[in-house]
Image 1 (cartoon, rainbow, N blue to C red):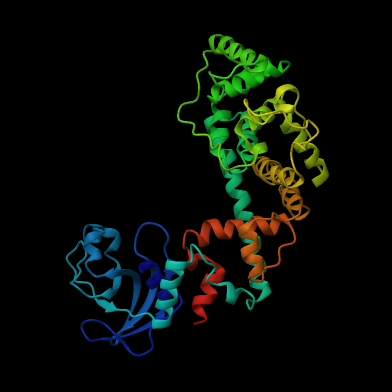
Image 2: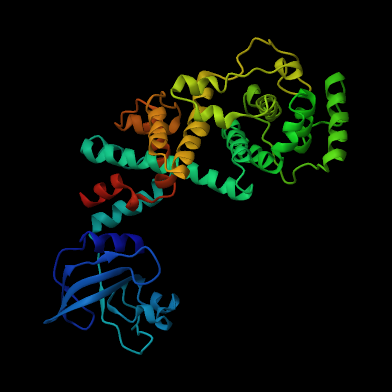
Length: 423
């Protein structure tokens, strides 16, 4: 409720009628001030006429006046400059650290605003409450918001690469290996594959890049996925190879991995995804230089044109019956997803890191030349009237749903703000 009060104060969405302080003086808001998102009062440099005097200073907003003490503002000199304490419930008097009694005003938001806000909080995570409003929203505002969301999503992914870099002592190839691994999880086992890649030195894998069995043994063994109760030529050799590699490099299974096995398509099984990781390493893992050479979406797609050999070419798990070896390893949509989640953020991150704006632009051009993702989130907004013709827009819509709708941050969403302000 406090966020709504701040929003209503900032945008002057207060209940109509004369405003007065709790001690009976007329209050006129000349300038609500600048909202503060850091520590300190909620609004800086407000201008307010109280009675017959004009005040300039800071404003603090709380649901209850007693929240002033609950937040310990009475002990913080940073709040001594507050000229007005705005509350929804005046349950006690508030004082600054110097003992000055704060002037207070009870603020009432317009009832229709409060009702809409409650609906957004209670239903917004499941439904798209603003669906009926989107179609009538000016296209200029909507396009600007889509652009901002898409940039934000790619920046978030670039920030994750930065985190990998910090964890791997600025090893760009190890960081790219983690980026690829996370993307190959396709949401099902992304976190587990990410941890596996971050904790398995790429230098060890490269030493055995010429041995498919060694690569698969190291990765599957560290993943804890080599079974003890299944026998056969491949799995017996795999077990023995992992024992040898574990002794040679002091390897142990990664603790705490919880692989999702059930209710997914066979081709998404973690064992097969790990076999794909091994296939990427089999050429020495020179993916970074190849990504930097990409000039088109087709160039990017060719990066993921790989094939499996041996056991995993015809198997989805250790105990399943062999399947047709000619079956497609990655669908077109899966390849496009890898371009979106591996190539684009890598290009943008590298361009940002080196100051190469042309490379950053190339990353976004890639998105604009890829088809949109097809999922429930994109469908939700498409049904509401947002046209989605490319991956740039679909990434923006995913960012909107995940970071705003599901977190109920409608007051921070441009669609939500305009919807509330229009009431």
